[in-house]
Amino acid sequence: MAFDKEAFYQFMIDNRVVEFREQPIVLKSKRESHLYINWRTAMEDVFLTDRLTDMVLEYLDWQGIRVDTLYGVPEAATKLALLAQFKLAKRCPDYRAGSHVLAMGRGKPKDEHGNPKDRYLLGQPKGLTLVIEDVTTTAASAISAAKLVEQGGVSVTGILSLFNRMNLDSDRRSAEDACREAALQPFQWIGAADELLPRAYATLQPGHEIADRIEEEYRQFGVKPILLR
Image 1 (cartoon, one colour):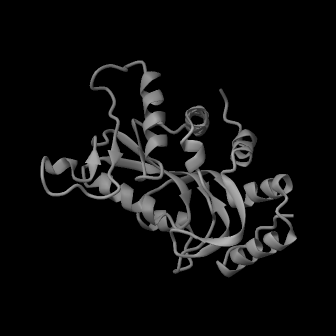
Image 2: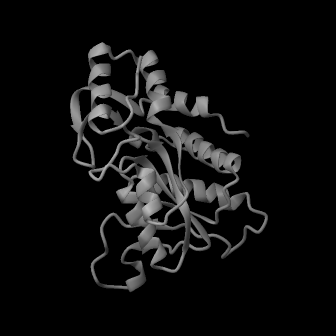
């Protein structure tokens, strides 16, 4: 099935992945925002996760991205990557014992007992590995995950984010800039703020005041204003 970006954005809107908040929420980057992108509810639902992983694989096919292992940033994208990897492996003509690995990272390193190789990872990625992140603000988490995987001698072919907030970090760099400087290219995203927000605003209609606040956030972040209306 061909990738349908409009269906992807509609999925985000219909399943409340995108939220406009009257009270700001603190992001992982420590910034406050009236815009919250939350994949957790969708990824707790088997049916919705099944559809989402299909869309990820459709996107990879659409972009011609060849990959052996999908590795999710712990813990936000772990389930997504594992289930997408399972589907990816099952459709390969060489699918057999030992052909593919289910690799996942620990949210916190394991105490120093047992096998050292299991301290950070449960299943070492192998072959061409794509790191998947759910929401990217500065790309710091995705870059850290990729560097950890590379320590095992694995080739990271890039980073794929479900959604790019399109913010700048404290050094006025975009996530794309940060990934380029870390030699982790390409950095790609399935959805992005400038495309999603006008669609979500038209459907959810949070009001002009919320729109003004979010547009001001982006101006403060040094990003070209994203107009919701």
